[in-house]
Image (cartoon, rainbow, N blue to C red; front, side):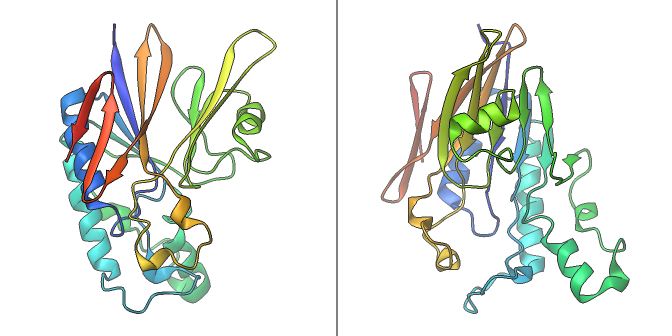
Length: 244
């Protein structure tokens, strides 16, 4: 039945990612034979450039973060081509430069250090990557959407987003009878780390990924939960359980 599949991974926040969850996802994607991997924003954290209060005990430097990000993108490219939708964390570097050292604006581009052949989607208010008809992917939920159904109605087209670190799904029937849905995939960061203590409600974040199964040009969206069990991580897809 399956023609091909696309994977959507949101909010990994390297180097503060959940290492076991990411390893599980890599194992899962290797088996699934993915056509495209979409990094839906905040793949990197840029903690050292944040305007928010910082945990001074955090060890990784900006250089460490970039090196780890390069390593992970190479692992992902061994599975499928990458499209990287930039999120609000990826623009922290340019924001920092524009405020602290304007002379370097346009001169520093850390993405040149990453492997070639990555398709980058800029972070803009109208950001919308369309891997297939009748579906858009953007990092931040559509404007005007304060719940899953209003997000779908606001976009007017089935939409996948990230940013909130919470798994969500909602759907409604449009006037033409077509079903329009909204999905948020959750995150792959380790929200137990003290770095996130400044954010209220971080203990209610959920981990997950999205698989877009494309059949006869129709996207069938699987919003997959990653379940923590002590030091183990599990996910289930089409009757098979993956564990690490």
